[in-house]
Every structure is written in C-alpha cells, then in structure tokens.
Amino acid sequence: MKKKVRFKPLLFLFFLFAIVLIGCGVTWMYLESPVDKNDNEIIEVKVESGTYSSKIGELLKEKGLIRSVLLFKIHLKIDKVDDLKASNYKFTKSMSMQEIIKSLEKGVISNDDAIKMTFKDGERIPSYAKEISDKLEISYDSVIEVMKDKEYMNELIGKYWFLTDKILQDGIYYPLEGYLAPETYYFDPDSNVKTIIERLLDQTEDNLEEYKETMKSDPHYFITMASVAQLEGTNTENRSMIVGIFKNRLAKGMNMGSDVTTYYALQKSMKEDLTAKEIETVNPYNTRGANMIGKMPIGPICNPNMSSIEAAVKPKSSDYLFFVADKYGNIFYTKTNAEHNQKVAEIKAKGDWIFD
Image (cartoon, rainbow, N blue to C red; front, side, top):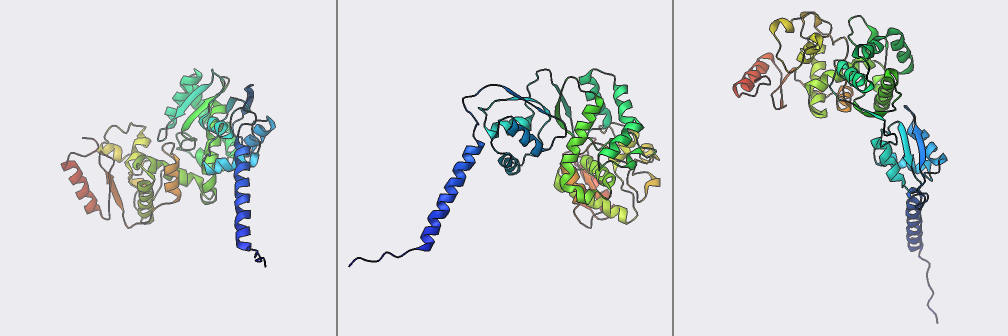
C-alpha cells in the first residue's frame, strides 16, 4: 500500500516566497541595467535649474535611457542622493541607471565650456560675489548691485517660502546673506548673476524641505541662528549644544555674547583679535553690544551648511550659559561667568588660546 503524501502548506509558502524574491531580484537587475549595452549613440539631456528628481526621471525615461522612473526614485532614496545638478549631459543607452545617477549627482557635464563655481560654507556674501565676478568676468560691484536690488529681492521673496520681508530690514548688509546654499555648481557659459543666485536658492529650497514645517514660522530666525552656530562650532553635535546655550542666554535676558557677530558687524576678518572698543560697538549685528540684551543679530552672518541648519532646528538642552573654544577647536561649556573666566585663563595658560 502506497504511503499517502501529505500537503505541507508552510513548505509551499516558503518555495513560493523564494520564487517571488528571486523574481523581484531579477526584475530589479533588469530595470537598472543598461537599456541597450551595445548602443553608444550620444543622447543629450538638459536638466534645468530647480527641476525635481521625479521630473528628471521622467525625462530620462522619455529619452529611452532608463526603464523605470519608480526605480530611479527608489535608487535616489536608498543611496541618499538629494542633489541632482542642473546642466547639459551626454548619456548613452549603454549606461546603467547607477552610472547615470552618479553623473547627475556629480554634475558631470557635456559642455567643456561650462563654468564651475564653488561657494564655501561659512563664507560671507562678498566672497560669493567675488566668485561670481571672477568666473563671469564682470565687476564685483555689479554683482553686489543685483544682490541688493530691492525690486529683485521682492520677486525672490514671492518665489521662495524661506525668504521673508525680514531680509529687507534697515540695517541688513546683504539681503541674501545666509540663504545661498554652499556647494560646487556648474553653469552654462551664458549664465548671468540672477541665474546663479536662483540656482543657489533652488538648492537651499531642496536642502530645507525636510525642516520646512519647523522653519516656516520664522525662517529668518533659524537661518540667522544657524549662521552663528556655523562659525562658533565645528560639527552638528557641538553646534546643537551652542544653539541651546544661546537660547538659554536669550531666555534669561542676557546678551548672546557671540564674538563672530562682532566680526560680521565690523566686516572684519576673524583671523584678527577684537579690541575692547570694537566689542562694545553698537550695531544690530553685534550681540556683544550693550544694546543687544536678549536680542538676536538682525540677520545671518554667513552662509551655513546643513550641519548648522540641523543644529538650529534641533538644539540640545542643557544648563550651560557659557562656552569657549581653544585653538584646536575643542569647546568647553560652563554654567557661571566665574567658571567661564577660569576656563579661559586655563586655555591661555596652556598656550592654546586661539590668537596665540
């Protein structure tokens, strides 16, 4: 008598799951592989400034360079790619999806005459204006004129949610200070000052998207705080601590007491020491001044990176009211003025004072 074979549902489900998994893997590999590995014909793709990643995916699909827009977007998420650079590209159907994404991320372009501009984090508008002036071969003053043009600034305020009327307050040195995203960019040779400004603002908009709900109540506050944290700290952790300390000081009706705001108020290089007279300067940027008790600087003092933005949005709570850094970038936190003065004396005694 033959033994009856029993149906094993768990084993069946296991094999079914394995088949589905293998099928998904094969499909994934197919969709991300070159559309035609033997086709090396150049296909030009122009990515305009401000184009969203989904639109770029659709453009690549229309050109026959990728098979799936959805997988393109999934790859961007998995690889944490959030900056696809605007430019003119030359792709081929023999390129894989990963190769195309890397080119878009790095801004590898087809135009040999493209203009490369690098805007560093922590730098001021004059530095950015000089970079534009040098690369476009136009006068520095003409760049600054565009950056201060009130009519143009109002147009930008209407276009970008994070720009408000606060950038046009009396006493503001440069309306766009703090709002231009530091990065290396590539521009077409026919670009002008406004093209460049708006490309940087487009990048800022992309950068701030994840913090929009928190920042939209007062973006000027967050960008200003981030700009101070940028120059006072060295990484996200200590910048978050510093922002928390500034909040403590403001809540207690104290001056923020930030030297970096004094340097900006005077438009002085931070490589020099400050005199007592300079520290006491009455200026809406100088948080060391007697008139600035409980007040923020009137506006940002540099263009901060994302580490500083995160610190401004997510400050760390503590009981500290003071901090000081040595020449190696080590930061020391204290709760009282006496403790602070003692720590400063210790740093100087060791020869680690920043200006020694």
